Image (tube, rainbow, N blue to C red; front, side, top):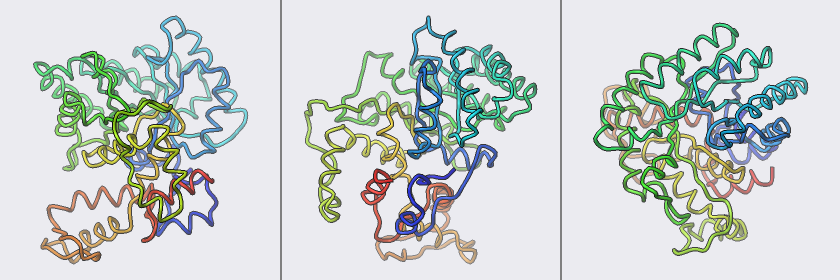
Length: 387
């Protein structure tokens, strides 16, 4: 699979200076963690789940979570587990390419039980999403994952969700973060990425952001995100990929504030209808939040609606200017440091302070590609929708 693989090869050549690479579930963890992109969540109880998975894969989805936790009623868990076993058998029988598939469980004991019940079809599974992750809960989850992996012989990754009240509350945050850091470091080879459960953070204080606001406008949430990145997202080799929070909106809402999406990029391409559609579906707020995610050190995003996938991927593509800067900073003859004017002559690139940024940018370029010099997110959105 590859990002933007659902659009014709001729269209990709027109869009990309460097095309996204191909990858699969057996690719190195470093590549997979960067390639997750928009991870689409779906309730595990959906009766035509196998059809849904293949339909979304054909539309450019590369990672999905099949949820047995908050997205279904407590009384539906057993039905959801049985449905997953049936749907994995269905997918296996079709012998089609599937996205990276993860199951979100409630308790550690579900992991080995589900792996046994899946049998040979476990090869279609990339891992498990671990909710309300803390040191106390996390060790049991990760030990269960290791045992299931050993028994099945299939590589299984963990994606812990950081959403517990202990992480949110100021008096317990530092201790909780330290415990999480120790745990994920001890099991580093199993942890693919860390996910942020911002909906649970808001719930603890009876909050819900409107479609006019991003997670970063809710200060109590923004503070937690900053602390999580501070401890767990460092660029010194100790950090992990941390994914962006879910965007909850996908239908028309009454707006309190003016649209946040600039008109000029759309007018230049005669794509005003696309701009209107994005605004009507509250996706202008999503676009702003994706930009804020990246500015705050997050990569990828939890998504609950297919319409969110393409904007996440379009804004994850590395611009030609970013690629040019990163390459200049990482040139072998620049190992001693120094400062240079960028090739675009609009900024100074300082080799040592910007090295970690450049390395992360080239990692993102590998999996999402590099846009041509005259291609922006509007062209990528338009091509993705057409594909």
